[in-house]
Image (cartoon, rainbow, N blue to C red; front, side, top):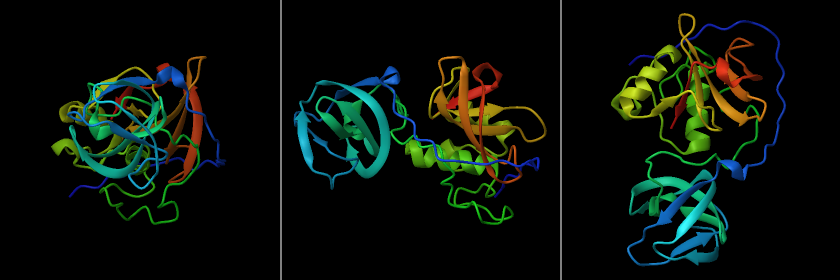
Length: 240
C-alpha cells in the first residue's frame, strides 16, 4: 500500500468555529422514484426520526442540502446520503431520489468551519483508516468528503490510486469524478504546485469571487487552518 506525505511550513495559525448558513441559491432538484409508494419525509437524516409528511412517487422536490445518516437501500442502490427538501421541510433518503447524478448535487447541510478532524493529536507518521498519512492535507480532505458529503472515499476510491494531492485531478478523472474550474461548497480545491501538490475543502463561496477553504498542513505544519483566497487561484475543483 502507498501512503502520502506532504511537507508543510511552520507558521503560527489559529482556528475558531464559524457557523455558516445553508444558502438556497445552490439548491438542486430531484424526482421521487419509489415505484408507487409515497416517500416518508423525516425530521432528521435517518429512519429513526419521526415523520413530518410524505411526498408522492413521481413528485419533484427541491433539495437545499445533503447530509449523511442511516444507510438505506432504495431504487438507486444503497446510500447513507439524505436530502433536505423544502416541501414538506424535512429529510428524505437519497436512494429514492433521481437527481441525474451518482454524486452529491447540493451543498452539505453541515457547514460549521472548525477543526473537528479526529486525528489532530496523532502522529503524522501513522496512516488514517483511508490509507493517507494523518494530519496531511489529503487526510483532512478525505475526512471532509466522508463526513460532510457521505462519500465512502479512500485512497483507492473508484478503483484508482489517488496518492499525493498533485495526482488528485487525474485520479478523479479516471474514477469518473467531475473536475472543473467552478468553486462550490463541498468541492475539493486542488493544486498541482510543488512536489506533492495540495488539496483543501471549500467551506464557503463568496459573492466577491473569493472562497473560504479549510485545510491541513499548509500555514502550519500538520495543523489546521482556514484561508480566504481568490476562487480563480485554485488549479482545479473536484466535485464528489
